[in-house]
Structure formats: structure tokens, C-alpha cells
Image 1 (cartoon, rainbow over the protein chains, first blue to last red):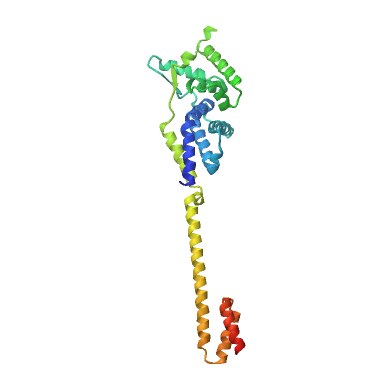
Image 2 (cartoon, rainbow over the protein chains, first blue to last red; image 1 turned 120 degrees about the vertical axis):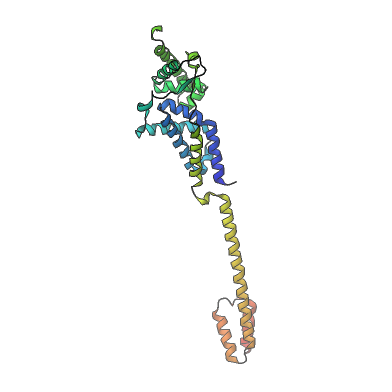
Length: 167
Length: 112
């Protein structure tokens, strides 16, 4: 088997294992589907540029999240971020069944989007991607205790936003 | 609050995204260089080595043929000038280095 096929297969394996989680991680950070897709694409194209050095990546999950974080920062610095135009225009969430109304989904999405970036990222990874606090810590490059406290603050803030009279 | 959040799910990413990214990755990796291809490199060096060895064999054979031709010409010579000319030619020709030929010519030269 040729070297190029080995490299492509390795990158495909990395994509199949981690791309979906990274996409939602980027979505939570960048607040735009187009931006998240573009940054995800940039991450994998940079990995493709590594050629045979792709085999030196020992912890693909850690590596990919770090690359995604850096790429998201570069993307924002370059001023390509479209979040202002589209953040509330598109629905990230959909109801799990018919018992949840579209308005409720939209209200919840708005509340999550209004959270600070780190808190909404923790919510997405913890509740919707099933990450543990250790895994969130790796993804966001923060200590696990910090991830747990950000999650707690996020839930408190969401509660306040969705039920202001309950305070 | 967690229960309320769990009543929602994230929308699936664009289904064409994976195919799009992976096709670009494939293009980028394969488009790097032909020298990345191990089978091409192996084939290239095998062919180059075979050609080099073939040229060596041809060169040795041509040299041997030339030596035999010169010896034949030498023995065919009828007069001393002709023989001296052959010896002079073989003396300046670097291909005439075979010890057997050299000794034969030397002995004949001494005899003459």
C-alpha cells in the first residue's frame, strides 16, 4: 500500500472518530454553522498538509481539539467570523419529540447562545455530546474542576434566563 | 434544568460536509508529489539499477571486442610498420588494459 493511501486513511479515521464532536465544539464557540464548517475544514486541510507527520500524532482527540481552538482564534482574528449576522437566525436545536414546541426550542437556543462562550461550549459538550468533565477539560484546555464550575454557572444562568421569576 | 435541556437535541451537521472535507483532504495529500509514492520510488530505483548494469555489461563486451579486433589486426599485419602502428595505438588507448593483451604485445615488441 502506498504512503499517500496510509495518510488519507489515517486522516479519515481521525475524521470519523472526532469530527462530529469538534464540529459542535466549534459551533458553540463560533455561533455560526458556516463558520464551524469552514474552521473544521481548515483543521483537516492543515492536517493533510502534515503528510507523513500525521503518524506522529499520538493523541488525535487532544490534538484535533487544540488545532480547532487555534484555528477558531485565527479565524476570529482574521475577522471572518459571521456570528453577528446569523447567530439567532438559525436553529441549532430541534425537539427530541413532538411534546416540545418550536417556540420552546427557539427560547432554549436563545438562552444557550446568550451564555458566555465557555459556558455554552460546556453545555453543548456535556449535555448534547455526553462528554465527561475530564474530556471537556481536554477539549477546552482547562482543569476538570473549572469545567465543572463553568457547567454549574451555565445551568444557573440558563435557569435565570428561562425562568426569571423563579429567582 | 438538565431535564429541560435534554428535551432538545443538536441538529445534525450538513450531510455533505464529510464528503466535501475528505475529498479535499484526499486531493491535498495525493497532490503533494509523485515521490511520496513508495511503489513509484521502488520501481524507479529498480529500473535505474537495471539500466546501469546493462550499460556496464555492454561496455565491458565492447571493450573485449575491441581488444580482440586489435589482436586480430596485429596478427594480420604483414610488415613491421603495421605492427608498430598497432602497438602505438594500443599504447595510447586506455581501453587496452587487459594484462594478457598487454603482455602479448610487449613480448612481440621485444622480439621485434
